[in-house]
Image (cartoon, rainbow, N blue to C red):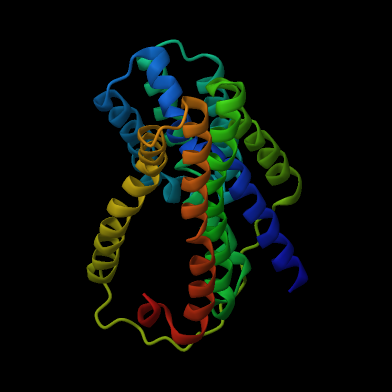
Length: 280
């Protein structure tokens, strides 16, 4: 039991550290837009490029984890996330370079979450799995807020490159933790959790739940990605200076995003008691 909880703690910490770059661009987009004369369309394309990279890679991660091991995939993806996200802060010189580096960051980040859930699922029996995966997903939400918390105020004080750099460097620490302390442990046998088998099996159930998840994420990622720029624009329209607008817009976006983390964790616990379908 203690070993499982330790593994969950390490993986959750690594999730926070490695996913801080997710919305770092959104947190500093106003400064970048001024420097490179980006239009609203350019900003949308860069945000979409990150998401596209994530989507392109995610379907391949299960196949790769089955062959190379979930830990190896998560470790490699975390290292690449650190490299590309810090590269976006250090080597961006026009809109094409930031688009490319954000695309590569999205590709790398896409190979962390799903294999990480698979790794954790093998550590926990079905009756405890909702709590574990809920905690891991809550860590993702904390990381999404953390990008705004860190990059926004630091960008206002020291420039956007420093703000983005400070969200990318922690991913190197996450890679070190995964390499040193995280390990895989497939369970020899899974205890029956009382769920009834789906009649007929097949692809019907997975197709329905995937479609529902797509509808949910259609809203969520658009909201998280544009929330920071929107609030910064609101602050600027209300008369804040540029630096104060970036700082306060980023902080408000962070708090609003962070508000979702407790629900993810609590509903994971509820799912262990009431069942997955009923909770969904």
